[in-house]
Length: 147
Image (cartoon, rainbow, N blue to C red):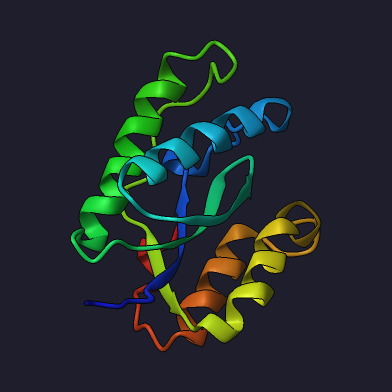
């Protein structure tokens, strides 16, 4: 018997960080993305975001690579968003993503963090939030690629 516990906090933005994820219809998007995660035999603990980016907290089935998992979510949701009249300005997801491993003990705090995205972004920009996540997780980065 094999056991696993692999949890990722995944963040990705709309192309050019455009404010195209209309708050009024985001619950439809989140349900659709939950289905994408579920079809890959992964468990979605929380999803939320604001007009220009999404946060997911999910486990990862060990039969999948992280890159393939995120690619599947982004490609399928992009096709859905582009064909959905509720998101007329959506033009795709920005290339790349952030993925941060999480301990089981931190799961509840990260769920709360993701739940509170709208309030959080009243005082912090996506750029500052993303840079902070990279620094907190010890990831070296070139700031010019964060713009």
